[in-house]
Each structure stands twice: as structure tokens, then as C-alpha cells.
Image 1 (tube, rainbow, N blue to C red):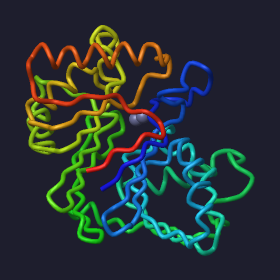
Image 2 (cartoon, rainbow, N blue to C red):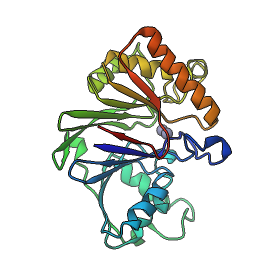
Image 3 (cartoon, helix red, strand yellow):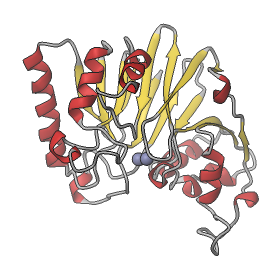
Image 4 (cartoon, protein in one colour):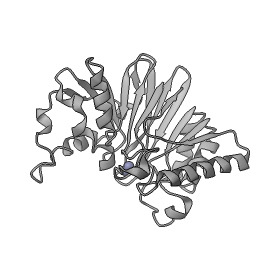
Length: 278
Ligand SMILES: [Zn+2]
Ligand SMILES: [Zn+2]
């Protein structure tokens, strides 16, 4: 598996001079399976540049799109994903049960005059909701995908990908609470993962004012990674106000925390355009 970050930011896009290193686009990841099949996770604003990249290869686009949940930072980029305007494009959508509603609503929610010049129905691409994850695992070219419910307002799904003995877990927009019984479910879901990407929107100081908002702080993400014996933790869903200089400090602070514990855990913070291979 190869994973590329096209959007690492939470809540709202924040372009500008303070977000050049870690990126200003909201959630979008590109995954390549061993077979070469592509899976996109979430359609935040990062998906716009990914669409341009895919179209530059001049091949028919045949991809899966998995949606964690339909908060706007995870679907906002969909109308700007240029392959949806090509009749040769095929997109198989799965994920959270409301995901098609979210993708449609990025064009028009029927309550107003529409958010976009054309309607969802006018898109040229073949976009199918395959809805297989609700019944358990989804298999794509030998890779197995499982889900876990997120602790997040309005709900959502986390994803686990397993291929040729490697495990990658993606859990964003997830409020960890060691006192809640869900914590042990997350430990089981992430057990022995090679890479865990987890929401760390807040610092431990900030989260005290934001309990119930559906996000975690880096300390609880580290606790989960250690308890689940994860090899590498990648902190994700960076707060919009977090500048590159803050992110660098936060990364060093987290790496020092791991060193103090003498733990065998690699830790990094997600950077737009960076690639993970496993
Ligand atoms: Zn989000
Ligand atoms: Zn959310």
C-alpha cells in the first residue's frame, strides 16, 4: 500500500503563508493497492488537486471513494474533482451510510437555490454507491477493508486496510475517551497496525473546552497507539489555527514524549503531499 496526503487539515481550508509545510487543504488521501487500484478516502478540498493529477495521466479513471462522514470538511472538494465531469470515469462509493447524501448536498440540498452551477444528476461520470461495508468487510483486489464507528457528532466510520500482512488504520474525527468502553474497541481495531493515522485536532489544554466536539488531542492518540502496539502513529486533522511553526514544535514535543516513555513507536504529523509506503 502507498498512501499520499492531499489534505491534512481539519474543519476548514486554510491556504496561505503559514500552512505551506503541513498544508491548508481539508481531508483527502490517495491510496494505491499492490494491484495499482486506487482508493480515495474523503473528498475534502485536497481532492481538487488529486483530480487534476489523475486526469494528467490521460487514462480512464476507475477508482473507489470511501467517505468517513459528511461534515463539510470531508466532502467540500467533490464538485471540484474534475474526473466527475468525464463520461469515462467510474467511481464506486462506499463508507458511511449517509455518504451519497453528503456528496449530492455539495451540489444542492433542495432547500435553497443550489450551491453549484450544475446538478449532481448532470455529472457525466458513472458514480455508484456500492454500499458493501454495511455488511462487513469490503475486498478490493485482495485487500480487506473493515470499519469501526467513530465517536463523533452525527456519526461516521473509521477504516482499516489489510493487504499482504500489512495493516493501515485511518481514524479521523474521533473523540477518544479512555473512560469510555469504545476505547477498548479502538485498541482492538488498531492492534499491531503498521500505520495508524489518527485525529489530533487539539492539544490536551485545548480539549478541555471542546469535549463532545468529536475530536482528540495528541496525548490520547499516543495512548491509543501505545496500547494497540502500533508501529507508526501519524497525527492528522490539524486545527486550522495551527501554523507550520506550531506544527513543528508539536511534532518535536510528541517525539520527546515517546522518547521519555522509552516506547517503540514512531510518530510524525501528516504533511500535505507526503507519501507513506507499507
Ligand atoms: Zn473533520
Ligand atoms: Zn467531522
